[in-house]
Image 1 (cartoon, rainbow, N blue to C red):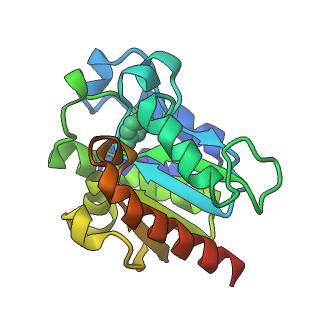
Image 2 (tube, rainbow, N blue to C red):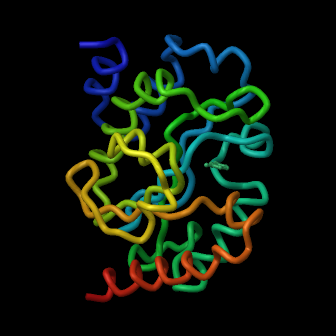
Image 3 (cartoon, helix red, strand yellow):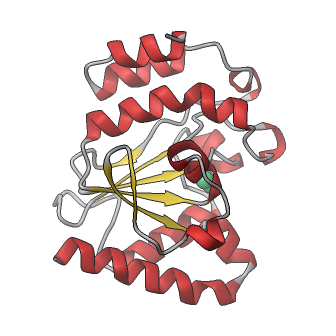
Length: 197
Ligand code: URA
């Protein structure tokens, strides 16, 4: 059992998990980051969004998806009536990332970093117990499905952490590739239908 696995397994609440994950110093990224970035939104939400890693603005604020990609994410989910600010659990979102520390210069997370932090993410999903998860971009697909190629995976329901899971293109990609917003919209409608059904 890795140290990360032991620490994650010992956490019996989200507060304990956050404390353990922040204290875990087996990951080099921690040294170069400003703030620990654990979650945002409502832990009672039906939908848990899993992103990649904090960027510059997230590192500054210590919250996931608060930069440009995060604004687009809020608009996208807002269009199907979901919000990280919602108190009503039916409309609420809960948001986290595979990595809780910013990679230097926003470089892509390395496979070893993803693998090292996976026990914490797995426990995070267990403690939140959402109805379903959204895998936002390649990194969470690598973490949860051991697969990559988000443009092929997106929009196809699968299982991650024992739950229904929908891979979607990352909003940072959509900002660079506006035409891909069409597929993202169809994925959002699929998510919405699943929640209604
Ligand atoms: N991109 C992510 O995947 N997560 C964030 O929190 C911000 C940008």
